[in-house]
Length: 123
Image (cartoon, rainbow, N blue to C red):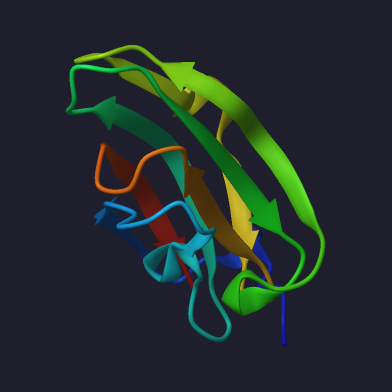
């Protein structure tokens, strides 16, 4: 598993991904795990609460793909108010996800939060 040298990037592809965790178990955001010999630069993650009640969210980067390994919280049990949005990551706090890492989201109420990420795949 290589970590590509991003100084010698040959291509950059802009992407947007969506995730709506159906239950309260940790949910792997598989689209944010890059393919071999690439890295994803996460430019933003926005969490929108589409219900009339506050709902907690945890977003973490894991030290292994498939949601495995050690979990390092980016946002931990943050309450998203009813009918509101939370910016978890933005351009000033962007993160890189390597092919041996993964992003996982855990919500307090299934199907209550919609997560959107804008990211670049660098190869």
